[in-house]
Each structure stands twice: as C-alpha cells, then as structure tokens.
Amino acid sequence: MTIARNTFAERSDEYAKARPQYPPALFEWIAAHCARRDEAWDCATGNGQAAVGLAPYFGTVQATDISREQIAHGLSRPNVIYSVRSAEDTGFPSHVFDVVTVAQALHWFDYDKFWPEVSRVARDGALFCAWGYDWPYTMPELQKHLVEPFRSIVAPFWAPNNRLLWEGYRPEAIGFPYERLEMPAFAIEMRWTLLQLIDYMTTWSAYKNSRTDAGAVKAMDDLMVRVHTMLTADTQIPIHMPLKTIAGRMHDD
Image (cartoon, rainbow, N blue to C red; front, side, top):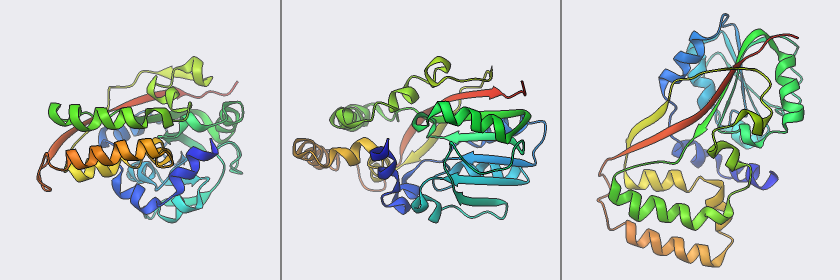
C-alpha cells in the first residue's frame, strides 16, 4: 500500500494534467440522490478533480488526502477546503456530511477502520459513492498495438489492491456496510492525441513501478518507438473509459 500511495505523490502536477475528467452526469446523479446539500466530503481527493465536480452542488466540499504533495496541487474553488487527513481517522465532527465520495482510491483503504469513520461523520440518510476508471478503449489499431501491449508490460507491477477496482468493488470484497443503490453506467468519453493517451497511461502506479525493471524498461522503450510512428502529433483519437461504481445509503442503527 505504501508503494502505491508514494507513486501518486511523485510529480503530482504531471499526474493532475494527464488524468481524464469525470463525466458531469455523475455529479448530477450524486446531487439528485442527496436530500441535503450542505456539506460534502471527498476522501482521498488527490488534486481535487472530484471535489470541484461536487462544488456546484454543495455548500462546502471538504477535500482530504493523506498526500501533502497532491493537496498542494489541488484545483481551486471558493467552497472547496483542502486538508491533509487520513481516510480512516479524519478528526471531523460527527454527523456533518450529506455525501461522502471516493474517486479512484477506495481499493487502498483499511475497511475495518474506514467504514466506521464514514458512518461517524455522515448524517443519517447520507449518500456514499465511490468510483474508479476501467481500462481505456480506443480505435482498434491503437488498442492492438499500444494499449494492450502497454498493459501486458506493466501487468506484473500492479499492487494486489487494484483487483478490487477491476472487479467493480464487489460489496463482499470491501465489506460494504450500506444499503446499496443502483447506479447508471457512467463512462468518460473524450478525444485525445496519442501523446495524451500515453501520458495518461504513464501515470499508472504499475508503470512507475515497472521502471525499476530492466526488461520492462526495454520492452516499453521499444513499444514507444513503434507507436510514435503510427499517428501525427495532433491527430485526435476517441477514448472510451467506463467507470466502476458503488453507492449506498447510510442510516443510523
């Protein structure tokens, strides 16, 4: 867990620039399922991408992360308040939040401590919602000659926790304690250049971990030489990235 978290803190400015934007419809759905919209907590906020998505709908968004480096590059909004806090022990008052969100990070938490903390700080009837990226999909030629080989090279370097995300945050795997709500199928749809797609994939923790392995470095360098001849620098390519999601309604016992 420590290794993976450290990779997210390295060059957080580049991480923030390369990450895709969550679909506005996701935040509309979250807001529509909150009876009150006074206070939101975006846990493990990173650079605040989810926090600023929530900002138009909630009076105040508390955006927390254990990484000072990530918080230092948080996106600014008047009602988003950043602070360095552990997901499992926040120090927030009890029963204050109308929604708790986690974007791209739920698979890293200590659930025996996290769920009680969420229940403590949330109001009765509050919404919990978490999501993460699935794999990117693009035009068939690039999928075959870039995305799939890239994934194959870095596959041995993923932390085991990532499987929780890939399998869709199954409630039994994460000890999900709340009344589950069905969510629509959300996806990120955009157009990127080849360089933007590569920049995104090189933010993966497995890629960063792979750079310590000589064989993986050579395989990746060879791949990059080949793919850079496939498209001109400004060619826009379609990207489809489904989201894995889980949401639930919290009630006092």
